[in-house]
Image (cartoon, rainbow, N blue to C red; front, side, top):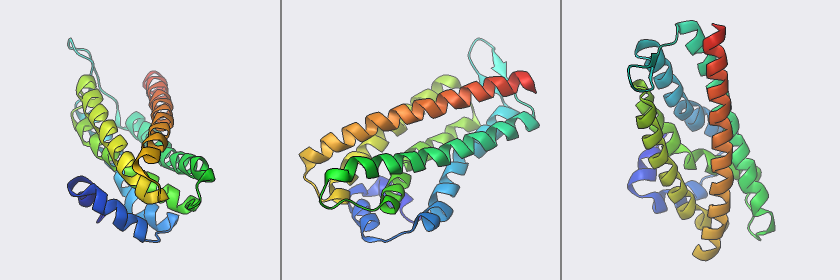
Length: 195
């Protein structure tokens, strides 16, 4: 958790610090990813049970506690899986680089880069669809920025190669994010009708 502030206040230096650490996947998940991924889950649970999703024009859908809990568990699992998938994507894409990092280091890097997306989940306390989309978009841009800053340091490559690598990685990451969001929406809609 000590890297969160650094990723926003001095991201270049923080990426170098992160690279210098030899953090294991289990340590990273227990001390960063599990906690950060809980932020949007808890906020969405509170927002959907206490206020409800506001789709505009007085169209508010409030979930009961059981349904919200069921969906929160699935949403949490999907986010944890998303970080693991992106770590594997970075590892796979770095296969031709001479200083290819280990899979564990790629997963740790993916977890730190996803920090802005996790923190954007705070807005789900008051779940207005347009506000969540706006804040999520800003978080996605900052995640791309962290990826652009971190990849050259992480792979020991120049900025031009880093831009190409991070652009490709971000495109795949956006696709993974869209799949996770689609699954969440489908499960949310199914859960709402089921319960």
